[in-house]
Length: 238
Image (cartoon, rainbow, N blue to C red):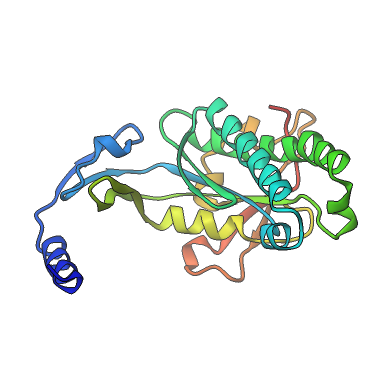
């Protein structure tokens, strides 16, 4: 059968397919969602951790060195996400997505962001700069940002047999990803007001009572409901 016929038939099948959507209380895995019309509804906190200037890193420097830097950042981010009860569900080059549900999910996501910043400042950056001084000499400084949002999402499974993965459809995956792409000086953590309002005191204030988050206006916000955000330069030891 010509590929054009496959494309036509598959498009018709997807658009006319009956769906089986269920409410979820846990983060689904690929195997737990039907490829043929399956879906899970839930309201998680979504987090994206994104390495800055990876295009410069990959194009200007040795590719093995660039790969090690990206791998170190993603590995540290994943370990911190998991240590706070988050679930890893997607990688996109130099970016990782974490999903938080259940008790204290807002606070756990906020703490994860601050702890990733600690790891970058106190572990990753000094070790990488010591090992590869040519990076700093060539204009590359290890930086990142984390974005966090919460909304209803529909988790579905997309692709073809033996070549498929989960897709997360809703506001929060997209907004969290956009926030993680913001580059503003030393600011490394961003969250929407809907998340901040639910964060407990240990995720908002330092031991001396100082607020770790600053309220600001996101001028590039795609929706009015996410225009008010909170940002931070703070770190917390994992």
